[in-house]
Amino acid sequence: MRREELFQNIVPPLIFTVVLFVLWEIVCKALQIPLTILPAPSEIFAALWQYRAPIIDNSWVTLWTTLAGFLLATVGGLLMGIGVGWHKNVYSAVYPVLVGFNSVPKVAVVPILILWFGLGELPAIITAFLISFFPIVVNVATGLATTNPELEDVLRALGASKMDIMRKVGIPGALPYFFGSLKVAITLAFVGAVVSETVGANKGIGKLMLDAQAAFQVQIVFAGLLVLAFLGIVLYVVTALIEKRFTAWAFRGQDR
Amino acid sequence: MTEALVELDSISMAYGKGEAAVLAIEDVTLSIKKGEIIAVVGPSGCGKSSLMKLISGLHPPLAGKLAVEGKPVKGPLKSVGMAFQASNLLPWRTCVDNILLPLEIVQPYRRQISSNRAEYKKKAEDLLHSVGLRGFTEKFPWQLSGGMQQRASICRALIHEPEILMLDEPFGALDAFTREELWCTLRDIQAERKVTVMLVTHDLREAVFLADTVYVMSDRPGKIVKKCTVSLPRPRDLEITYTQGFQDIVHELRSMIGGKH
Image: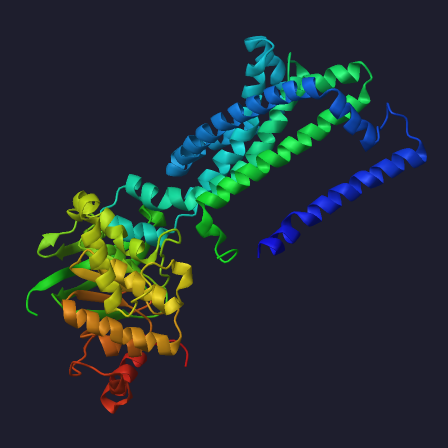
C-alpha cells in the first residue's frame, strides 16, 4: 500500500518536473538563448547555490510576512464569514463593499501602505492579509448558508438558539469550505507579500529579484522565481494536510 | 387514551405577510389524544408539513387556537421530536453522537450532559439497539444504509423522551421492503413508549397500517376533508395489509384525494 501510494503521489510529479527542466535546458542550449533573456536551469541552479546566503535570508522574510498576513486573514476571515453568514442583513450590508474591496488591485494599495507604514515588513503583511481575506469570508459564509433547513427545524423545535445551531451544525458543517478556502488563501497571501516587496521593501524575495533585475543578473531573478514556486508548493501542501486532518469526514470514501 | 394532548381549533396559517401571503392551511380543527398515532395524508403541497411546523411551534398560526397540554403554543415546544424524509444526520458525528445531539440542546439534559455523558451514551446505545442498530453505534452515517440512517434519525427524535413524535414522510425515500420493516419498528417502539405520533405521509397503506386516526387534507390551502378512524385491532401484523378490511379503508381514502385516474 505504502509503495503504491509512493508511485501514485510522488513519482509522477517528480518525473514530470525533471522532464520539464530537461526540455527547458535543451531548448536554451539548442537555440542559444542569451542568459539575459532566459537562463537555462543549470545556470539558475548554479546561481541558486552561489547566492544561497542572501536567498535564504530574503526567503525567510517573505515566508514569515506571508504567514503573518495569512494568519490574520484566517482569523479575520473566519470571524467575518461567520458574521456575514449569521444574518441576512449583515450579509446584504457588507457584501457589496467586500466585493468592491476585493476588486481593487492590491498592487495599487501598496504605495499607500508604504506611505503609512514606511518600507518594511508591515506593508507586505497587510497586502498578504488583504488579498487572502476575501476567499475565506466568502467560503465560510457559503458554508454556513448550506446549513440544512430541516435540521435547523429539528433543533429549533427543541428550543435551540441561533448560537446553538451555529455551534452544533453551522460551523462544523462550514469547516470543509473554510479549509478549502485556506488552500486558495495561502497561495494568494504569498502572491500578496511578494507583490508588496516588488513595489517597495528593504528585504524579501521580491526585493531581491528587483535588485537582481536592475543589475541584469537574470539568473538570480529566475532563482527567485524557483524559490517562490517551491515555497508556494510547500505552503499549499501543509494547508492541504491540515484540511485533511480536520475534515476527514468530508473526504469519506477516498481513504476509508 | 382520554385527554387531548394537542388541540387545533379552526386554525389557519400563511407564509409571508400582507398581500403576498400564501395561505397554506385553512380552518383546520382536530385533536390528538395522548398516546395516539395520527396520520395526515393528502396530495403533495397540501400543507401537511406546514401542519407539523405549526404544532411544533416553529411557525405561528394566522388565526385560530392551538393548544398543547391545555396551554396555548407561543414558541418552539421542546417536547417534540422530529424526523424527515432525509435522515439529516451530521456526517462528522458517529451514529451515537448524532443521537446525543438533542440532549446537548434541551434542558434539563443540557445542564447535565458533561457530567452524565456516559449514562446518556448508554441510553442512546440502548435506543439504537432497540431499533436493530446493535453494532453500528460507533459508525459514521455514510457507513449505514438508507434504512439504518432513518432508524438512527428516529432514535434522535426520541432520545429526549418527547411528548410528540413528528414524522414528515420518514420512509418516503426507502425501498418497499425496508419501508415495511420500518413500519414495524415504529409500531413496536410506539407501543413500548406510548409516545404520541403525528405521521405525515402520502402512502395510504402506511397511514392505515400505523395510525389510529387518519386525516385527509385537500389541495392548497389545506383543509381537513375527512377524518377516518382506523379500528383495526392491535397489535397489527403486516399480514393485515392484505385483508379486505384494510383494503377497503385504503380504497375509501384514495377516493377522497382525487387527482386524475
